Image 1 (cartoon, rainbow, N blue to C red):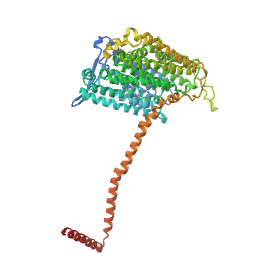
Image 2: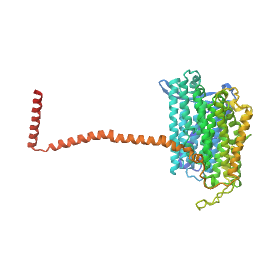
Image 3: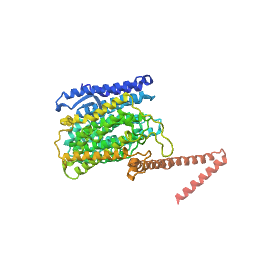
Image 4: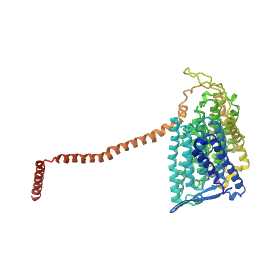
Length: 639
């Protein structure tokens, strides 16, 4: 089965090709083909898992060569797959959660005329992500990296008849292309340093490189690429706009595919980052900034999908912080990534269910009391809410709390790092509890607000909230079960971290600067305080239909802490002025010089043309004039 692992990519890729090429003839059954190919890929992944578990832990890193790919002088690259605990963990997450999202999409997109094309793009997205995590070289990984960028562009802008959606897709595409410059530079540095781009060579030789500066440069360029894909500061501006796509796209991007790719890249490149302590520190700092950035933004969003998007940004920040802690955090970053994949996918699908019952209204200020009308959505969303809060024994408790504990052990428990990173992670947990509880209470509790009059005297459209069909609720139920119990199952006896040891290595226990029981109790207390404050403001009190003026921080959070304004004024507008100046110089100076020369020659030609008038006396006069000029010149030279 390990030798047949190429089927993992080939099956959904074939499904995408069939759906795109078959055209309208597949409209009646194309969506089920999309579900079948994703499900078949999961079955293959499960069989590969069984085969890998049958090997000794020391023999669980297997490279499967497919064919010779590039042979260009000193650059030789074979196309192959690396089957190991890290890649297979991602494969299982992508195919399992991805298949549930496919099933959900059958009902969610039922009335869309282009449903078949939507499933083709979903299959393409899954295939590209599987190629990214299964590649055995950085160059092949880059192919999958660009593939998920293309698929995200197609899916975010799926409803591109709305100009705002098309703009959001372009924004995501361009920001990620900026980040990809980092990946390209990293590939160049790798080839210059190691003479190869395959994992076996690069990751094996990296610990032996004595030039720390080179490893730091490679790691920082990889980090730039990761920041773009995983929406980390300062390349996070595209994530909220990505909500323009259909809700299943949001679930797929935020839970199982694109935004997790950056975390995968950093953990996969662990030997490089471990040999570059400065790059690790920068990674941890970026993760810490982003987890607070996303949490603050999430506190002020009224759009249910954008609030969840801010949550994703923050949770990926936790993972990036863990990865930046080095070997003590690599496994915990992936652990939280897996649990997050379940509860965040469940909550996004729950948001889609709420929108389905509320005629696609995304404004939570127009919700309220939906727990009485959408009980399955309420319960399944509630389990995801408890999981992301980190309430024991739900999944988030087992993964996020490990990151907080590791943060308090940063720098081997010495210096400023454990206190700064530990306190940031702790405060982030409290803010997370507030904004996620705000979302939960505004949606499912309080008074019915869809029957109220607006402040301008107009009335809201009539709403008839109702539960979603079974094809939408069953994926939510399955994900809710994972949100409730998956973390505890994986944490038994440290089973998940032991499973990843062939890739992340065995790490001795590091004692945090505070006793672990103190950290756990403090985290739970902060979470309960955050949830209580949200309950008091958004469940026990009336929620206004229009957002209040708010504090300066609230107003800044509503516009994503002015990230778009900063990008426009620092990069976009100077770029526009530069290009306009270059266009002006090109037209006025470069083109002007050549056009001026051409005009002068044209004038000379016109003058000469007038002399050719056909009169003998004119030609005789010109000859006499020429003779006189010649005489003057000769006399001048003679003297």
